[in-house]
Length: 148
Image 1 (tube, rainbow, N blue to C red):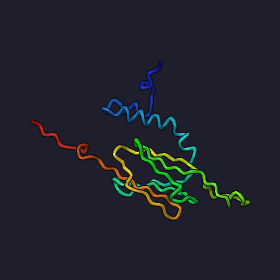
Image 2: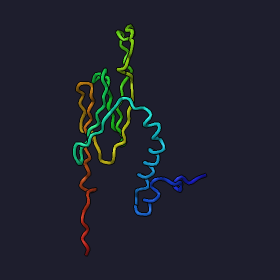
Image 3: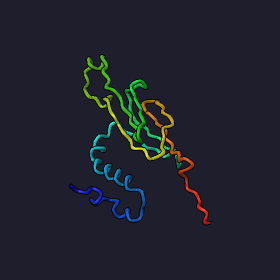
């Protein structure tokens, strides 16, 4: 049995200078291991916008869907956006010479940092915008320790 914590990772050089980050480093190592699978599917195209120091917006280009077709879920620091397959009866009868606009179903997941919460979502002109904000609890903010 191998001790997978002893396996070299990109964070090995940082471990001697940190305390309590093992779980985070292991999480990033797992993500790096799965990176080829995570990046293989680039549908739908999306942007991640840094609005301010603590606010972000994820924009997904999902033309061909309505609000009712879209499901957004935030659970355990993972934001998941998904749709169902659209079966349009008119499309089944349509003969395409070229079909470049896709309305296929998808499931896209984003890992959220600790304390990042979804503030809301909007859908306009085929772009789904999800507003995120990092809200650090007062107890977790830096504090000065007085010496007695």
